[in-house]
Length: 350
Image 1 (tube, rainbow, N blue to C red):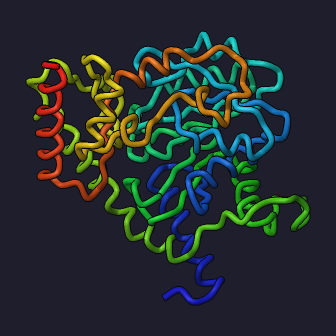
Image 2: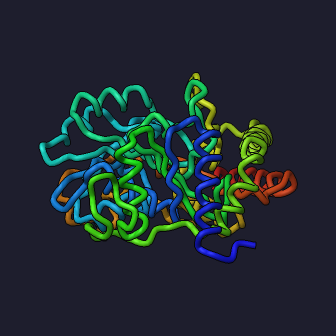
């Protein structure tokens, strides 16, 4: 049992080493949540009041909130037709001399073109802070998505594949970013070299030792949990394969998508209303249950007067992203498939 701060630090340090070894990165900094990871990472790469951060409109509020908390401005960028990545024409058009970072969000666990993102960031001399809170276990050419970014940010919330009930971590191969991240998560009490303790205002974003112990115990099971999610998603697609109105999303070549949320394209009238109806029938999903809309349409961000991100809105209005947990067994998947198939038939006949 962990009973002292020193023991807690030992457990957290060991957890960070285990994660770094597993993911093949130089540094892991464990924090109290995925949101804290994003907040810490953005500060570590130099985002300050008055700066801008390029953020996909196709994302959740938690992705952009840390930008605002740091006094910076999220600049929302539209997505490509597949909803996997930025629309790079829109991305280029929104670069200004105030942009400090770009924040790709791997929503539902899907990855975009990570090589293109690195090239874009290098061209404009900005940092890449990747929101991988739903993407642990997703790889591109065998490399965990996010580990190629300046900093990758992950969540270990109870809904995630690797769960400590609550928690998160960031990954980086940049020594200075790692040092600033460790300082920022703990009130700058352990500062980078040549800085004094408590010389900057920071936060308590530390991960508790008992949660780190849970993470160390769960980490060896991660690949098994990812494979289980892949199997569940494959099963759902197979059970719905006779429905022409429901088509599974494409997986790009070279990518292992963790299928955090299986994604289905709907060819129905009023697909968003259908998703809301499905939620009432017991099938939890992003647009029907959580009413996911593009960030540039959120009231908390309506001060942004730029043109709306129409591709993101159109994409969200045409998909069913089923929310799964590690506890959803094959019977639950069959129940979801039966409900979807029944309600699609009814909806199409009305």
